[in-house]
Image (cartoon, rainbow, N blue to C red):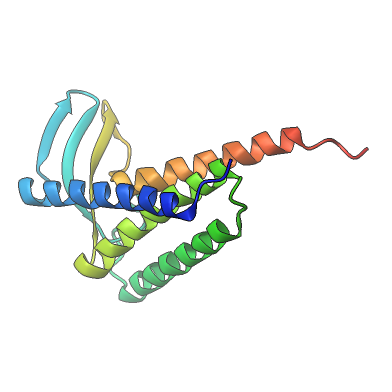
Length: 164
């Protein structure tokens, strides 16, 4: 079964729009560092501004050159993922869906960095005093896309007969 590129484009647009909508809602309803408890002891909505990479990596860096390199690296990585999306045969649905998730998440965070100078993160999962780094829907799309790609890679290796 083949899925036309048009449907993948709609899939990407759906997740990108949902990501931007959630960030807009958070930006318009929560002040910076405001905490809203959703599931006490486990999950909060907390608005933070991430000037670094996924899950807050390098977010405390004040080095503008590091930020420029980070932004250029994100754009370059997006280009590589888009290239592999179009090189992946149409009948390989799971890898193309995985790459589509990664593309939508990457675009969502790049848009934030270019227009705001930071990414709005707001999902805060924790247990006791341990908090997972803040993240957003775009980060989730990237993470799920990578996990699905790895799953497909491991699954396809099991299907390939051993040449010996």
